[in-house]
Length: 278
Image (cartoon, rainbow, N blue to C red; front, side):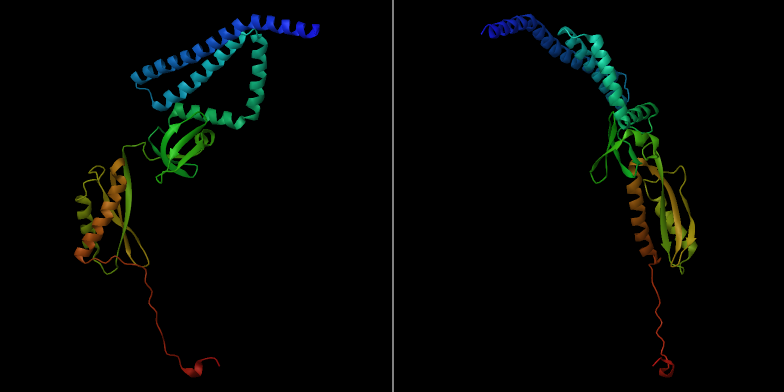
C-alpha cells in the first residue's frame, strides 16, 4: 500500500511538473503550424506579384514548408525537456539511413530540381517522355503529373524524366505539319499540284511564313505521293491537318482526280487438262 501511495505521489508530482510544459508545447505547436501557413500564404503572394513560374513557386513552397515543420518539431520537443543536440544527432543518423535506403527518391528529388532550373517544359505544355504523352498538370517534388488526351492521369518519376529524352510540342509557337496525298498514275501531275496549291492557299490556319511546300515525295505501288509541308500555330495544328485533308478530298472529287487504293489484278487461265497432275 505504501508503495502504491509512493508511485501515485511520484506520478502526481511529475504530472504537475510537466503539465505546464505540455500545454505550452501544444500551444506552440498549434501556433507554429498557423504561422507556417501564414508565411506560406505571404510568400505565395510575393511570388505571384513577381510573376514567377508556377512550377517553381509550388516546388519552393513545398520545400520551405517541410523545412519549417522540421524546425518547429525540434523547438517543440526542446520545450518538453528533450536534449535537442542528441536528438539532432539521432535525426541526422536516421536521415542518413533513410537516404541510403531511398536513393531512388533522392534521385527523383534531384531530377525535380533540374527540371525547375533548366525548364525543359512547363505546366500546360504537351510533352512525350518515357513512352507516354500528355499535358503537364503539375511538377511535384518526386514526380511529374501529366494528363493524356484520353483523360488518363500518369505520374512520371522526375529522376527518369530528367535523364531521358523529352519531346516538348508546346515549346515553340508554331509547328510544321506533313500531309501525304496520293494521286493515281493516270492523273496530270501539274493539275494535281495546282489543285493542292489552291487548297493550301484557301486554308486560313496555314501561315504564310514560312511558305508552304508542295512536292512529289515518292512513287508508290499504287499512287504518286505528294507531300504538303505547312506551318500553323500550335493551337491550330491538328485542326489544320484535318481541314486540309478534308478539302483535298472535296477538290479531288470535283476535279475528277483519283485517290487510288490498294488493288490486285487476278488472271485466271484455262489450263490443258493433259498438263494437269493426275
